[in-house]
Amino acid sequence: MLTPKITATRELVSLNGLWDFAVDDGKVTAPWTGRLGTRLQAPVPASYNDLFTDPSIRDHVGWVWYQRTVRVPRGWAGERVIVRVDAATHHGVVYVNDQKVAEHEGGYLPFEADVTDLVDAGAEFRLTIGVDNRLTPDTIPPGTVTVRSDGRATQTYMHDFYNYAGLARSVWLASRPAVHVADVTVVTDIDGATGVVDYRVAVEGDADVRVRLIDEDGREVAASAGASGVLRVADAHLWQPGAAYLYRLDVEAVVDGAVVDEYPQTVGIRTVAVDGGRFLINGAPFYFTGFGKHEDSAVRGKGHDDAYLVHDFQLIEWIGANSFRTSHYPYAEEVMDFADRHGIVVIDETAAVGLNKKIGGGIADMLGGAGDKDFADGFGPAMQDAHRREIRGLIARDKNHPCVVMWSIANEPDTMSEGTDTYFEPLFALARELDPTRPVTFVNVMMAPPNVCRVSKFADVLCLNRYYGWYVDGGDLVAAEEHLEQELRGWEQMYGKPMIMTEYGADTIAGYHSVWDQPWTEEYQAKMLDVYHRVFDRVETMVGEQVWNFADFQTSSGFFRVDGNKKGVFTRDRKPKAAAHALRARWTALKGARIDADRKEPS
Ligand code: GCB
Image (cartoon, rainbow, N blue to C red; front, side):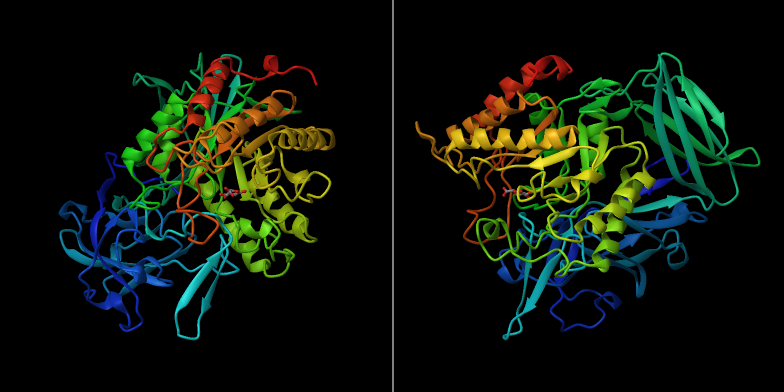
């Protein structure tokens, strides 16, 4: 699905701002048929949970309603009119006046509706969007709703971040011509000094296609006609980690010699490959440094915010990191565009998190609780269908981003139980069928070491989350170092595939200090990360380290987390803990070297 853009043939009106807002208390039927009877207003984009002081809003389980009046620009007569919702978490439904125009499951991917026949240029209409935050055993991510004897609904889920909900990303009114560019796919390659851009354009309606590739100075460097073709760029500027270069593919739909639609598609020329135990970008070994992140900030929840976007990337640059993972769901498209523009490498993850009954209702169960169920106890074909939809949606949205170098189809699923291999094998096949150019992975949980995991055989790269020194060997960094190395050597021996530590870290209260190895202190966090780094530097097939987490983030309440997860290297308001300075020293030294190979002592 194309990102909406303003071009000579397309216009865009932002519907962000304050909307009328109401929690569905079940007393009003069909709230979209009239004005919402509410005094509340909520900003878009923002999760609604932390905006209001009323706990019944924060803890609400079920539908909420957003409503506003929209005026269609008077110049849009004859154009198609589209309502585009960048995300509705987790289930969205859109009404234009009394009419339902779209419904979408999955809280982190966009959807749109063509509302042309229901609206008039120059006139107003009532736009109502319902958003349901309920997760079920069949949704991605999964969850459970329990209705108590007093009628109150509560929700539990198996992922370690707060279930923020609402319209956390932008909503748009867009115009486009009836005959238009419906989709663009670019795949790039390198042939000596020549960049190769393979393009495919889907057109709605009957039109010819013309494309021109424009460099950053505005010069045309290649052109072609036809719905698909190959462009060759002599002396191409490559998109490199830390040194992005972006071309623009101007795509035109042409009818009788006249341009009826144009759409600019960003193109970064680069290749990605796995070669034995190495991860290659543009043919050179690449070593990932950086973080698992979250979309999370105070008050906004998961609401996209350009100020945080810019600041987070500043901190990524300051610390010398070159990458992050979109743990544990697709991030806002603005984030992906920014990563393209600034040369930050991304592992792009679906929202398939918490598919693990062995962890049960949270990490607490992993520490010896009741999470002993098998995968088949509750996760079945309906979830697999939803999972397929998530993979399709993610790849359709993000396939053209040069920053995306790998798809992660799940975080820490159960891969120990019988049936998990038959669940995952077709999902890997689907991702590869949709995008044969990028490696596909999933993120392995600590309970599934090499001899136990049934799914790692399908992954191109082994992505591991490990908590030696925290959930295991807590406070004992000597044991942690030994056990970590033992396990990594086991993986290396069994698979020989490239490995990335996609999570390692310690909860840390900023300002808490000790001269001893005291968990929760700033010193312990820094020292624990250092233990891991020593081990990584000894293991040949390690190709990356992404600390958990970039910043402290909110989780569901409970006694296991104190105002959220504190494994951030930065606090929730982005102040550095001591570990940030230590990481900066290491990653700045590694950076520029285009790392790997030379760095490793033979083991
Ligand atoms: C994990 C999860 C992550 C949690 C983290 C933790 O393994 O992937 O979502 O937040 O552990 O801090 O416990």
